[in-house]
Image (cartoon, rainbow, N blue to C red; front, side):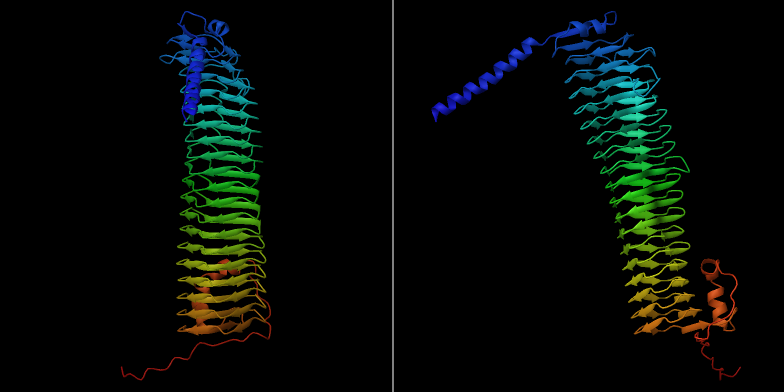
Length: 531
C-alpha cells in the first residue's frame, strides 16, 4: 500500500514539473502601437503569448505558428481594404479582444479573420466590421468562435468545407448579405447567436449536413430567416425566428432536403410564410409555435414521409397548414386555429391527419382537394364556417371526427368512394352534404341537433347504415331540380353560400338522374290557438 502511495506521489510531481517546464519555455511579448505586430509574430515561438496594447495597427497579419494574441483595451487592426486582415494558418491559436476592420471586399474569403486549413483555434470577444466575411473558415475543424460581433460586413461568418466547429454567443448583425453562411460544411454547432437585421438571410445553408442550431435569434432579416438548400439531417431547436421582412419570403425555407428536424422553435410575425418546404423527405416539424405570420403558417409543395406533429399554428392570416403533393405524411396533434382555413391538402395521397384541433377559422377547418387514400381520423373542428370540405377526392377514410357549429360539418363535391364512419356531427346547419358524390359508405355516424342531418344533391349509390339521427329539423333531404321547390333547401343550403365553395366549377345543372329521392319538409300543423 505504501509503495503504491509513493508511486502516485512521484507521478503527481512529474506532472507538475512538466507543466513548469512548459511555462518556462513560453514567452510573454508585449506590443505597443508604434511596434510592428507582424514582426512580433515572426520572432515569437510556438506557445508564446503576445499582449497587444490599445492603438491602431495598420497591418495584415499572418499567423503560421501556435500563439495567443491578446488585445488589451480593444486595439484596432486596420487592413485598409487591401486584403485579408488576420489569417490563422496554424493549429491551436487564440485571438482575443481586437477590433478588426477594412478587409478587401472582392469575395467572401476576403475576410476580417481568416482560418485556413487549421484546427483547434479560439476566436473570442472580437469586433469585426467593414469586411467581406467577418470570420471565414475554410477546410478547418474543431475551432471555437465565441462572443464576437460581426457588423456591417458582407457576411457575418462563412464556413466553407469546415466541420465540427462551435459558434456560440456571437452577434452577426447588419451585414449586407447573410449573417451566417455554410457551404459544404458538416457537424457544426451554432448556439445562442444573434443573426438579425441582415440584408439577405439570417442563416444560409447549402450542401451542408448534420449541423445543429439551438437557442439562436434570427429576426428582422430582409429575406429568409433561415434558408436551407440541398442540406440534410440538420437540427433546429429552440430558435426564435420572427419579423423577417420579405412578403414573398419565409421564416424558414427548406429546398430539396432530407431528414431535417425543426423542433420547439418560435416562428412568428414573419411577413410571408412561417415555414416553406419544397421537396422534403423524412423531415420532422415538431412542437413549434408558428403564429401571426402574414400568409401561411406551414406551406409544403412536394413532400414524402414527413411528420408534422404537436405544433401550435395560430392566427396566421391565410392558412394554418397548406400541403400540396405530400405522400405518406403524418399530420398529428397540431392545434391549428384562427386562420381562414386550418389545413389544406391538395393532390396529396396516403397521408394520415390525426388528432388535430382545427377550430375558429373563417372559411373551413380542413379542405381536401384532388387527393386519394388519406385517413382523416380523430380530429376536432368547432366554430368554423364549414368543417371538412372534399373536392374531387376519392377513397379517403373519414373516421371518429367531432365537428360542430359549422354551416356544413362534412361536405363532398365530385368526391366518391369515401368512407365516413363513426363521426359526431352535431349542432351544424347541415351534418353531411353530398353534391355529385357517389358510392360512399356512410355508417355509424351520429348526427344530432342539426337543421339538416344529411343532404344529397345529384349523388347516387351511397350506402347508409346504422347512422344515428336525432333532434334534426330535417333528417334527410335530396334535391332534384335546378332550384329546389323545397323551402328548406333554399333557406339553409343556398343562403349559407355553400355554392360558393362547392358549385363554382359547375354553374349549369342539366338533367337529373331518376335514382334521386326527394324528401319534403315536415308538414307544419296549423295552430289551434285562437287569436
